[in-house]
Amino acid sequence: MSWQVKLPSPPPGYRYGPRYGPSRENILRGIVYILRGKSRSLARDALLVITNMPLPPRIRCADRIPERGPFVVVANHYERPGLWMVWPAMLVAHLVRERTGQDTHWIAIEQWESFRLLSVSVPPALIRRVFERTFRTYGIMAMASPDAPAAARAGSMRRAVQAIRDGEIVGLMPEGDVGPTPELLEAKEGVGAFLLMLAGRGAPVVPIGLYEEDGRLVAHAGPPLDLAPPPGLPRDQREGWARTRVMLALRELLPEPLWGAYRETEKGTVADR
Image 1 (spheres, rainbow, N blue to C red):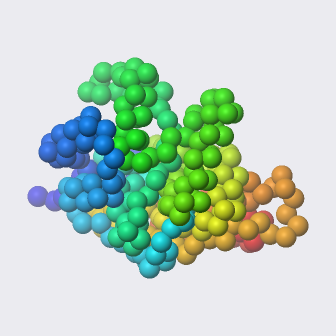
Image 2 (cartoon, rainbow, N blue to C red; image 1 turned 60 degrees about the vertical axis):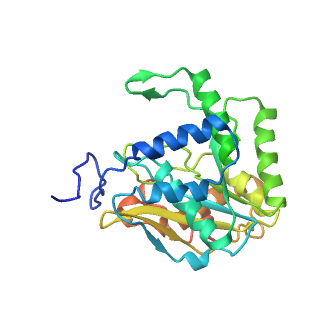
């Protein structure tokens, strides 16, 4: 029997691999860990997940990742039918820990507006409580939603800045969302300013492209980015410059069918200077 599973809507010229699903044992472990609420290493627990992958993942250019923090990992929000983005995120967390001995503190939205479990809609208030406990267990930093008060969003940013000052590693997926296929989406507005703020505290930005090849999940690290804006670039253009600079770096780590929203963005524009 072939391991290749036929799934809908791959981008032209791109093939999906098999379906990914956690084992019953890992589901039960995760529930117990989160109910206990004690701090755990996401990267260490990721080993349990990686052993459940249908095929072993591929790692490319891991030596480009700094040997210790502080730095910021940026990755594309890779998700497709049959593969939830948590799998690639845990692969990155494991890869970074193998290189540095440190955990990655992912930044994630503090709650989903809607979620269904076995076709049953879960109330947003319950989602938030589960997220809070999960985030606390695994050191994930909650980012206030876009419609939250400015003070709440500022507090989220301060926590990320403090993590960088403490020599830690922060992880971010600039798209912040999932499209109908895993092609790149435009990065969220404000991401560029956020990354400029972290880079200004001495944190290199390390892009990691996530995709599949020959049915295997791939994590491809790129060289750390210098996010110092070009001399003379007007202040009101810096956020867009940083946002596009990071997304172009991710694009160069991905196969062309996944370039998506950045397919027509030419190198040599103001975003790439």
